[in-house]
Image 1 (cartoon, rainbow, N blue to C red):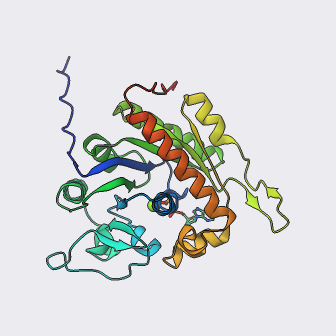
Image 2 (cartoon, rainbow, N blue to C red):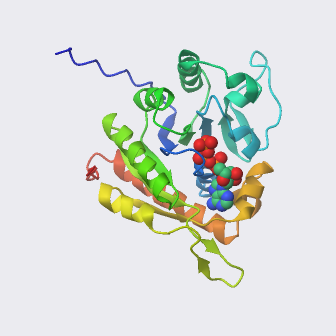
Image 3 (spheres, helix red, strand yellow):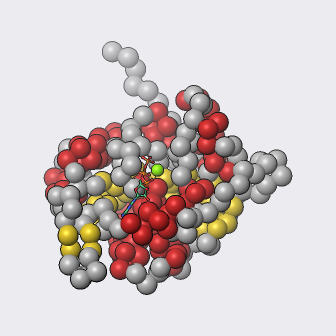
Length: 274
Ligand SMILES: Nc1ncnc2c1ncn2[C@@H]1O[C@H](COP(=O)(O)OP(=O)(O)OP(=O)(O)O)[C@@H](O)[C@H]1O
Ligand SMILES: [Mg+2]
């Protein structure tokens, strides 16, 4: 039998109180949108917040936060600051087309540099937007970043829920607490105030129950969310009083509470039943 492998060393980030990863097994379920609006919502709750785009191959944070230029890393002081949030993304250093052709070791190198060589200063929360899937980049990050926990994003459809399970399993393997599951694009809120369940709704809650992790809430589907994201001014910032912004603000409150519980050594941690 091969000897057990030594656990990779966790990176120390002394000024950062809590590091929260936003993940999913599946692509396109709304991780980057959740991560961005969650970061802004935590900031609206009065917290000091950073947002790290760990999607080296396909960074979305520059567009979502309205940063459309590429900077010279030798003369630019990272992280940038937008809408009160400290930001880092590979998209600030290279055009997205360039990042697409990199291989695994480069991804590892840059992610580690983003965590260790960037002066994040004092932060209450560093939110990390993970790339889709459960491959090498996700494993590197979950094993080396000092994560307080992970938020798993799913949509109500079965395909997304199956992949969300894989995400849960990955965090279980690397012993990172799952703060809970959020169901994105959960329902549509009509102008008449009624909820329309476009996809089957409730799968996220069911998965959370099955896995024995907290259910963090539901984010409605609304074209305005996509429009605000595409225009670089996320909905929580552009329409802070909207019903959807409220769902992100509620999510931020619950995430903060779960982080507190998971870092409080006296609290009981949820055990995954997968
Ligand atoms: N609640 C929502 N309502 C409407 N559109 C949404 C919502 N959440 C996300 N979207 C849109 O869905 C698309 C995918 O979202 P996003 O890029 O956040 O997903 P992702 O999981 O990060 O994708 P990837 O796996 O490629 O990183 C985007 O166009 C985004 O604007
Ligand atoms: Mg993304």
